[in-house]
Length: 222
Ligand SMILES: C[S@@+](CC[C@H](N)C(=O)[O-])C[C@H]1O[C@@H](n2cnc3c(N)ncnc32)[C@H](O)[C@@H]1O
Image 1 (cartoon, protein in one colour):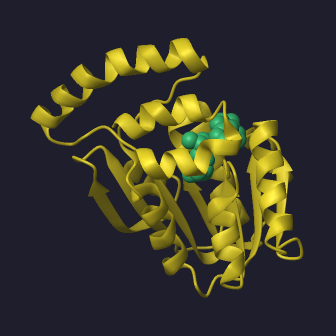
Image 2 (tube, rainbow, N blue to C red):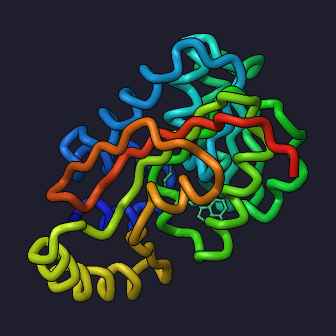
Image 3 (tube, rainbow, N blue to C red):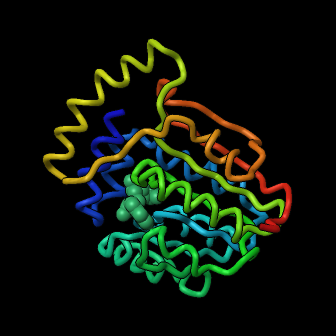
């Protein structure tokens, strides 16, 4: 959990974000991104929501995907663009500075997969709902959604422990960064309600982190 709180502080320091996150999470966040990338070796076109410094977008591009990423934070976007240039991936990756509210500008049925790591917990309920609705619209039939983020533990005791530890740390992080994340109460449920069939949900970090994979079974006819 310390990683998530620390992450809020690091977001104000995009240039050291990846290095410090890797240290703070003892490599676990990087490993989550590697797991996501491994699920998408065959994906031609991928969207990364809240792409931050572009670490996952670059991984996906290296294995052959065309990737678009977007992030609301201009400094994160700048770091992501520099990474893409440095790795000679400019032909494969485009990074946009925008919030999820801009997702209605993406074309219908155009992506094989949508990914997002640690960004959904920063969105409001309405933003998550909006983002998931557009994920469904922009994915091709049978497209995949892979979201890894902080969640509320399912077990009662872990839930109580989570809240007890989290509140003072969250307050401290807010005082430093002026931002807050909100662990998602039912990530798989929200993805399912948006029209995806849940393929897997992997819980880790004392039940407070989840990677959820959903598949769009039917074309969106709404
Ligand atoms: C903790 S960082 C994670 C970055 C990256 N996905 C990663 O895992 O390294 C969360 C990111 O979500 C972005 N974000 C927060 N709210 C957003 C919104 N409404 N639209 C787009 N990006 C947003 C932040 O700017 C930040 O870069």
